[in-house]
Length: 429
Image (cartoon, rainbow, N blue to C red; front, top):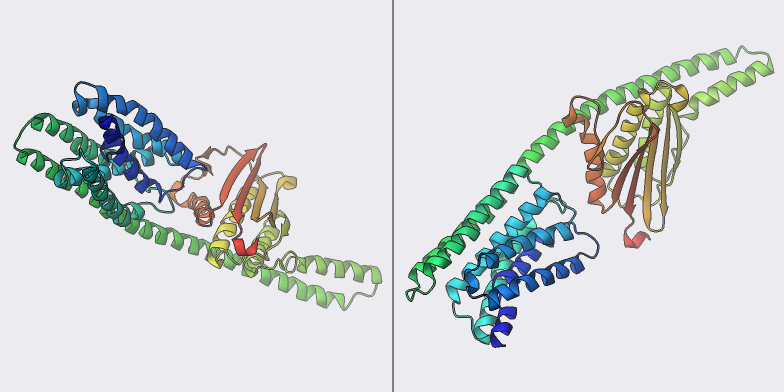
């Protein structure tokens, strides 16, 4: 009975792995009720490991006693997060490396763990080491709750961890078991400790490198967008200049019109000409007004019908840059899709912005022609330059995620529907 209690409360293997896994789970985006999934996963793995460590004749020398703790973080990341398989493998590898650093520290400084005081001391060392790992490593690796890691980097990290932490640890146990002199045992553990610590610190360096590369890439893409925005602004100025020129001549001609019916027709034409400058531009948000005015002008000159119902009174919690980027990119995509439509009756864009039940609702709908595929929730561009032309949708997604919202893309019968839901802050509900 005493051995059973010690096996349950000792920080060895699965118990320590559960704490290490939590360190790398907490900074990530997690599924609803993830805690229940985590506890259920822990219970299942503990039920599998306990007979091995307690009742098997070979005790800790069983390979299964080492393999189960490797599988636990994989299962926990799969159940508790929405990350890809690459992110899951990477997070599990980091968690295993962190657990091994803490475990080696316990083995180096607290080798006799058979009594209550020894077990408490082992847990203290374990928690202190993992708290340091969480503070200086785990919280710094994700970006917006996701690991920005390549498949090659994830496989390399997992391979190093398995080689150093699993294979060498198991091999060192077999070579040192039963030896009275613990010097070789401590040397093995010291080597494991620094090897796994080096792997974790290497991830921080890799994260900084990826951050610099992302900053350079973002700057390059922003410059491309700025160039495109400059061309769009010039086009809008040309539209205004042409309209102003036409209006000047219409007003001059109106002075010469004698027939009241002809005068009324001319006035109606002038009214329709200036309508675009005033329609749907008083939403309660200056940024929203600017975007709608700008894109409305572009729609008029390209023969695209435009309908909009917008309420912008509660959009102040979204920064002007983010709001402009999100809606501007969404409308640019819709305009681009409509330009390719040959049927004039289908060159239509519908825009809706409203607040309801504590959520801001954005929806942009347009027709399109050709094939459009959706991969990982994002439409794949039909253009050859996937790096630059796919950046708009990824930019929208990044803004939505920054404010804790969701984005949904739907294609049906030649219609493209983009729906964005962003929760309002509590003080605006």
